[in-house]
View 1 (spheres, helix red, strand yellow):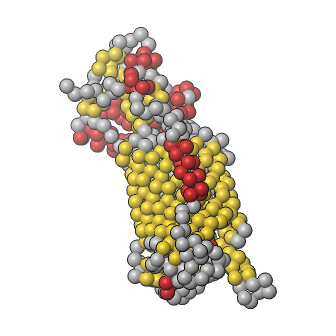
View 2 (cartoon, chains in turn green, orange):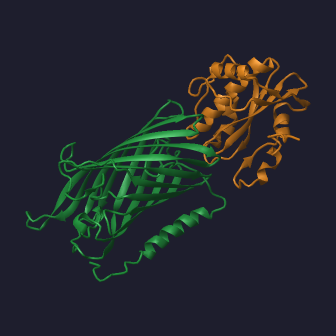
View 3 (cartoon, one colour):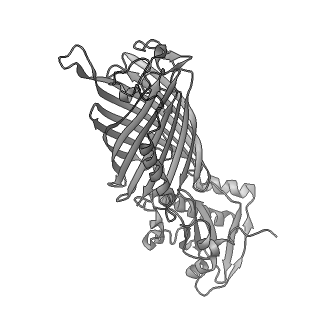
Length: 312
Length: 171
């Protein structure tokens, strides 16, 4: 679509809104507080009953096999504590991306959120879209503060014009050193459906599914009042089935995370780099695995996620 | 001259932490627990052996070996301590009767967005009369506070540590 757009400018309006939201929260002098201690890994810490929060995410995905590749994903969220054990949320997901000679064999290849786009192999492509609306519920069964280990269950359906997903998680948390050292583990099972080209159907398109299965872990130490820092490890698998069959991709990411939590405000940033541990699987796309790193779908070399929240 | 680490308390309300809530100065907390009595500093420094005995007896970490203790003219004890909050430390005071049982506890400084219910008088009254022989376990002999679990557990652990400190180092 943007074959003529040789300069591919950044989506200034999208980025500008995100920056304003983050700065708007940061400039609130009376504010400040906590919760999302990690960029990718969830903990069992939930909002207390009746508490509300607005949260803004921005994720930058950068660098595929070669050429140019950037994707910015935004998420604007409202959370509410139904009870001290149950937190619900509603949010909007949107994305912008650009690509040029980034895929297998040097072909311009849009990322997974734009997989329905037919793009010329030599195109300077960019696009933006509203991905969908998500609902989220997290129910805590055990608290790390009274039961020794935290345990929670997470469910998040997403519905969009050409995307559906049902993401589920098991969340574990264990704290040490007077709760200054937080460790957490997430198991994710997320079947998803995309409305893609399909020559075998009369309409030329059909809903096609894959399943993401992830094993993520993180630890963070509160090294000063309000500040904590640590590391996150993200292991993502994709299957062209609902179970552990027909695996297409697996990627391993690792990087630092830092978190500031104040009375009514928090900000968290995590940077991840893909480790060269990926291997070929039965359904791996030829040419997408280079130097031990996989670059298919939503796998890339670098990720940076910034999350900010305001409580009221 | 070494600065007393608690000397900042009276001015905490105007500290750089714009949202800190200081409910008492040290002197105000002393008078709240021991009205009309005179309190004299009786600071002690725990030996490694005493610290280990306290940790073994309570399963709670001894974070500071310098214990801020005042002796009340009526025979009681006033101990100023701090525990880890969600983001910052919670400063609290424990008043002990001459027999070592809890007379009263007061939250001196609290800076968190949630969990301030630990200041609730009914919750704090649960500690009155407790001795080092009490379990002092959240959800056992001390009620939890929904939405304030971390603060409630750490204050409970702190009081347990203070009572063991009395039994091992002050009595």
